[in-house]
Image (cartoon, rainbow, N blue to C red):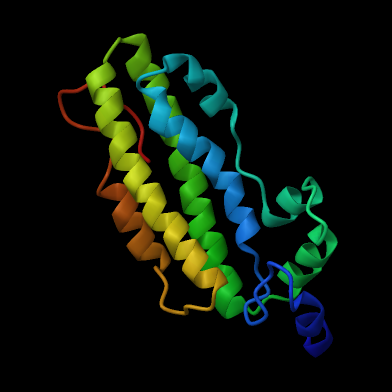
Amino acid sequence: MKILRTKVRGTNIDEQTLLATDYLNHLNEPIMLLEMAADAPELLEELAAWRPKSYIEHFAESAIADKELAIRAYAAAPEMFREPFDRTIESAGRCIVNTAAALIELSKQERGDEMRAIASEVTAILGELVDRASSIVHGEVTTFDRTQIDRILDGHSLTQPGSARSGNL
C-alpha cells in the first residue's frame, strides 16, 4: 500500500483515499444534458442512452495517462472511503436514469414546465451527491449513509398523487 501511495503522488489520485475525482466526469455529461433537456427536448434521447459505468469501466475506457494506476489504486482504496463513495455514485446514477425516463414521459405529454421544475430539482440533488463524492475522494469521512441518501432521493419523488409523473429519482 505504501508503494502505491508513493506512485499516486503527483497524480490526480488522492494519496489517502486512493480515489480520483476524474471519475466524477462520468456524471458531468448527463448532469449537463439534464440542465438543458427541458428547453431542448431533442437531448432527452442522449440523456436516456446514458448508463452508469463502474469506476473500473470508466478508467479502462479513459484516455488519461494514469488510468491503469487509477484502477489499481481503486482496488486498494480503504473501504472507509470506497464504500460510501460507491454508494453515493450508485445513487447519482440511479437518479439520472430514473429522471431521464420521467422527463421523456413528460415530454411526450408536452409538459415543459414540469420538466423544467424536475430538471432543476434533480440537478440540485445531483450537485449534492457529486459534492459529497468529491469530498470522499479528498478524505472527508463524514458521509451520507444509505438511509440518508435514500431520504434525499425519496424526498424528491417524481410520483405525486393526481399527476402524470412517474418513477422515483
